[in-house]
Amino acid sequence: MLLIAGLGNPGAQYAKNRHNVGYMAADAIARRHSFSPWSRKFRGEIAEGTIGGEKVLLIKPSTFMNLSGESVGEAMRFYKLGPNDIVVIHDELDLAAGKIRLKAGGGHGGHNGLRSIDAHIGKDYRRMRIGIGHPGDKARVHNHVLGDFAKADAEWLDPLLSAIADHADLLAGDAGADSTFMNRIALATGSVAPKPGKPPKADAGAGGDKPAAAGKSHIRQARNNAQPKILPTSGPMADMLKRMFGKKDG
Image 1 (tube, rainbow, N blue to C red):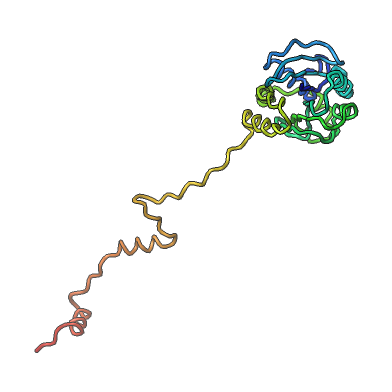
Image 2: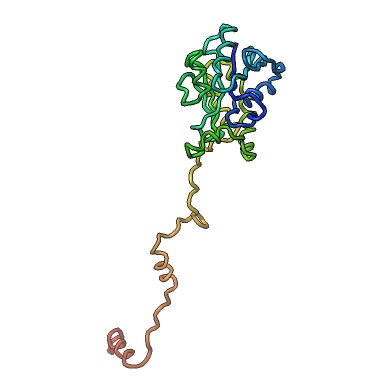
């Protein structure tokens, strides 16, 4: 069994916050795979379903972000799961908006939801970090995280959430499929840049001849255009030439 926890804060006023992108991902997975309706349990909302032939429990802690570990830990103990059976989806300031990372273990990086989960179940669970970007100024971080996604963000957010839901079957496999999952997400969202092709060959010109070397073409042209010299037929110069090259009288 796999437990997927999407982190966020409960309440309509927080629903569109960047901090609630974990909730949004959990909702997208539930819709895509026709999970059961959400119900209240384990200090959160849960939905059950099957992905890739494996039973999956989705949970959205209702304890507020700072106490997320209470909800996740309670569900883990009830189903006798280990940290390796858990994927936590959360927002990440230190990733560019729309980027995603998935790995097992690591630190909380100052994220209060992860800090709470670490305290309740340890650090060996898998973490799916969804980038929300950094506002660039530490003083603006609080309002950025607890602010709503802008309308323009839908251009990358909606395709990303859809891709996560579409490829959630890879989450139900072992951790070895994590790199495949990230590659699929990158391809689906168009965040993989195509490899640059070879530069085109220089135009050889008509007939396939190589272009003339710089600095020499004008010389060749001058030679082609040169006119034959006309020798004088009369006057002192003509008399001199006759004496030099003409036949001697017998």
